[in-house]
Length: 396
Image 1 (tube, helix red, strand yellow):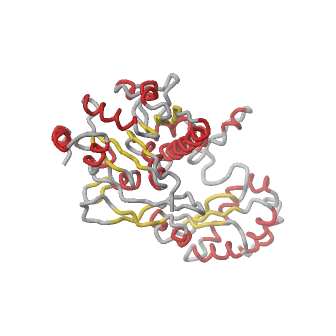
Image 2 (cartoon, rainbow, N blue to C red; image 1 turned 45 degrees about the horizontal axis):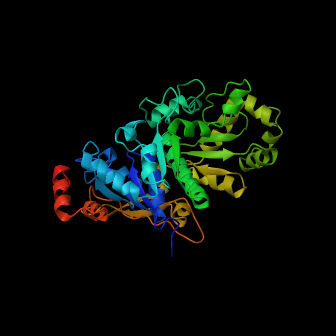
Image 3 (spheres, helix red, strand yellow; image 1 turned 135 degrees about the horizontal axis):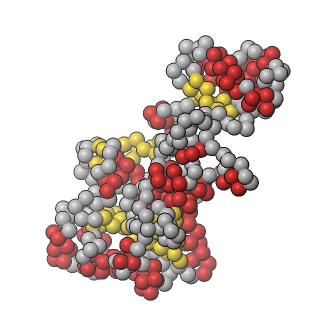
């Protein structure tokens, strides 16, 4: 079966997380991704913890299905090879600090002269324009600047960092969507174009309270319970926690019945949503006292679920590995490791895009420089020159 991007060639200068996510999704659906890596160590994330058999574990998922080519971009030969590859490519993706590709002679204005149909996507912390564009940045920096960190945590506590690298993953998916959109535009017009993706822009687009601030309100942290709906939040049992969402009259009445406290549904302290918000501490205490009357959180959870009330256990990440829904949706899968590793596969996240006519194919990630010979021969280099470059750039 032909896949979405069969025949598409992408030259990938990205590293770490945000850029590689976008090209990994392209690879899953058939694109040929030529991952350009620096001599000696390759992508920094190859050695980031946690590691498996000495290899950075995150590299596997972020770079599945790609081909690895080592190029020294400070070497004229490296830049010449890059130009040859780009001349034959459909897409270039890079995640250097703004100005770096221009310093290599590989800015979009240079590249569109050798490949007018080229789509180029730059992924950076703050974008290619604006007063922050020259600054370095990580996910945690854009979480802070986007307002998202200020919205996370207890009202009387400090801002809290998201437990996942939210900015990187958000911008990676946005970059993927932008590249696919540009490919559709090229199909209709024949024209390539430049895409500028900023981690900060993407995080701000996820902050649903910007408009609230825009009308003069001051949204901030509300902790584990919603500021406008109740009950709607995290409730603790003896050792584990669950989510309960019962904010409307019907669901609230059902929850009261399940807890054996039907009278609470009409109690003046809890009868309306506004009443429950005003008496939130008392409400939380009553619900949690009931939950803690069970030795296992799954018992009250089953009762709440049977009543048709939206609810869920707060899973650990380890719980995900055995979750029947995730396994049925192939969101927990086996991913092969690079050639030569003692451990042959790992449990990994699947691809969330589900199509009726094509399937994601998550192939193994590459060893550093694994495809050096294949790629260099494709742009006219002979065995002697390839051997000389491999020696110079420390490719085994």
